[in-house]
Structure formats: structure tokens, C-alpha cells
Amino acid sequence: MTTRTLTRLGPRFLPFADVASETMPLGRLLRLSLFQITVGMALVLLVGTLNRVMIVELAVPASLVAVMIALPMLAAPLRALIGFRSDTHVSALGWRRVPFIWRGTLLQFGGFAVMPFALLVLSGHGEAAHAPVWIGYASAAIAFLLVGTGVHMVQTIGLALATDLVRPEDQARVVGLMFTMLLIGMMVSAVIFGALLEAYSPGRLIRVVQGAAVVTVILNVVAIWKQEPRDRRRAMAPPDQQSFGEALTSFVAAPRAVRRLLVIGLGTMGFGMADVVLEPFGGQALGMSVAETTRLTAIMAIGGLTGFALASRVLSRGVAPLQMAGLGLITGIPAFGAIMAAPAAGTAGSLVAGTLVLGLGAGLFGHGTLSATMRAAPPDKAGLALGAWGAVQATAAGIAIALGGLMRDAILTLSGNGAVDPAAAYLPVFALEILFLAIGAILLGPAMGGLFRRHENTTSGKIGRDA
Image (cartoon, rainbow, N blue to C red):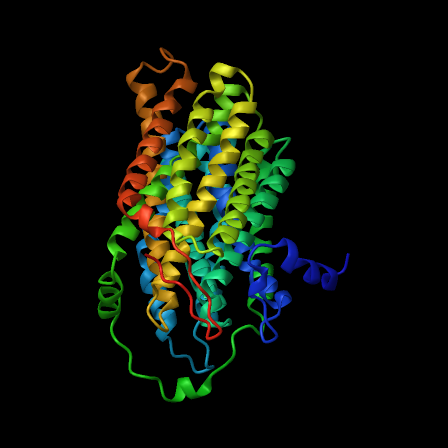
């Protein structure tokens, strides 16, 4: 099947593909979306494959793994600043977005290049047992920080570039298309990593992670090649710009902005604490292999992709974005119930079903909050709006990941390391996630009833605003 055939089929079967136009064809949009493939690949490695390998195969404490995975989130609050800087960046070549994407790509490459060696030293196994302990901690921390910072930069600026290239009324949909490609990237890379690590060995781990570093550079370069037009007039006569503080204050002062950001944080924590413990839970509670638990990430991505597609269809019929976000929060509650029931059932079916529904809820929630944020974005401040959304979302995810791992280890320690079934140590984590989702849904409760309304698209391109 040729690329031309896939492009023709896209508008029928790919969510958000109707955003394509004569000036921005679908093929160009799909090529730009390759940066989301590399982001998805990084997320699968960080919160899926590597955390399982470190906890189970390398016997690294889950609390330490959680802290390592959460370290990249230290850069998350900077996403708003990075987005704002790309909005106002002045380059001699006339670019705003490309320089930031390239810097982020180099950070990702550098982190992946050293990460497998750092993890092996951190575990203290084999010849690494003679290395000083601080080398393992320091090198692993640096590797995770580099990758995480690069992911934040590439994703925030890549999404801003995508919105620059389409009409204002299509910006929310093109961001939806980009996140659909993120989920596809996570799903495909999870399957590939699972297959490559079916027979785990330290050497194979090194080859897989460093191969991901090379693929990241190649795909990101292809993604941004001749995408952003050069505007030399902007470089020669840069317009007056307000400060970051003024722009952020104006954004937060918008109606319901604080409530929206609070719901984003709570929902992200509700869905995100499972990231660091779901795969180890499958390994310890049901005896699943590395390949089998890695496929859980692919299953969650399938659910997320379904959620994004469903949200796209429903939102186009007039439902307000925050209504969709609330539906996603409610969907996640029974999903965690099914996951918690898996050890008692004794089979992986309940875990797989719960993971699929969990991805569905996360997709509905993510699309709803993202669409609400984009519709509330000030003119010419797409980078700031996406950065604020990403900053809250990523910061909440980092806190949730660290909290999940710390809770699991604390429960095992307090119970006497063996006095309780290791699988039972995960259940309070899932219960707390249910609580976060419930609180987020309650916060949306007073407004959800009034959020059902039709958003009529007129010939002038008018779109409904979020309630």
C-alpha cells in the first residue's frame, strides 16, 4: 500500500485527519507528527519497559525507580516558559520553533546514549558491583533528566509548530491528531520493545536503548524538515512582546482557568500513579514476563487511541470539552477496580481489560482538557497555552509516579518485607488513584450539567468556547 493510498484513507479512518487542507496536506501533517512517535517511544521506555526491568530483573527498589522516573518532571514547570520563549523567539534565520526542537532532540539522544550503562551500574550487578555507588545514582539521574527535558521541549514546541501551520479554527484538532500519533507511537514501540527484550540480557538492553537514541534523531529531523517557514522580516524587526510574567498572569486570569488546571492535575495524578507500578504489578501478582507486561503499555495506548477517536466524534457534535474530561475521569474508576481484582481472579484477563478501559478513560480526559485549553488560548500564544497544560500535566505525573513507588515500598517495609503478599502492596496505590479521579469529577460536577450545548460552526469559522 503506497503512501498516497494511506493519505487518501486517512480522512476516513484516522481521527482528526479532516484538519488537512490544500496548504497543509495530510502527508505533511503526518510527517510532522513523527516527533510524537519519538516522544511516545521515550515514554514507553521510561515508564514502561525500563521501570519493569529495573524493579524485577535488576532488583532496584521501586521507590528509587519511581524517583528516577519522576526526575524528568523537574523540568515540567519550565514547559510554559519554553512555550512562551518559542512564541517570542527571534532567530537570524527567521525561525521560532525549529531551534528548540533541535535542542530537545540532542538532549534526548544524550540521555539515551548513557542510560543503559547508568542503569547497570545503579543495579550493582556483575562487574558493576565494584563501581562506587554514587556513580550509579549520579549517572542515572543525569540520563533521566536529559531525556525528560528533551521530551518536554520537543513535545511542547512541536505541538506549537503544528498549530502555527493550520488555520486558527483547526488548531485544537491538529493537536488532537498529534496526540493520536503519540498513542500510536507508544503502542507500536511497546510491542517492538517487548519483542526485542523477550529474552532479556544486559547487552540486549544496551542495544535497544541506544537504538532508540539513533531513531529519535532520525525521526525528529525528518519531522521538522522544511516545515517552519523562515520569516526574515520578523528577525530584522522583532515586534514588542509582553514579559512571560505578564503573559502567564493574563492566561491564568481567564475565566475558569484555575479550575481547569486543577482538574488537569488531579486527573493526571489519578491516571499517572499506575505508570510506575502497573507493569511490576503484572510481573509480581500474575508472573507475567517482560514482554507480556510491556504489552500492557500497548494495550493502554489502544484504549487511549479509542478514547481520542470517540472524543473527537462526540465533541464535533457540540459536547463541551470539560464534559468529555469528566466522562474520562468517571471511566477510570471501574478500570482500577478491574485491575485490583486481577490477583483474586488469578488470570491476566481482568488486568488486561482494566488496562484497556483505563487507557480509554485517559484518552477521553486528555482530549477534553487539551481541547478546553486550546480554546481558551490567547491569540498568538499557542506555545504558552500548550506549555501551561503540559507543565501542570507533567508535574502532576511526576509527583504521582514518585508517590506510587514510594507507597509500594513503604507498605512492604512496614509489613516486614515478606509478611504480606507483594502484590497486595500495590492495591493502596490503585485505591488512591480512584480517590484522585473521584475528586476531579466532583470538581467538574457543578459545571458538567451546563456544559452540554451545541457549538455551531458558521461559515465564518466561528467555534464554540469552553464553558
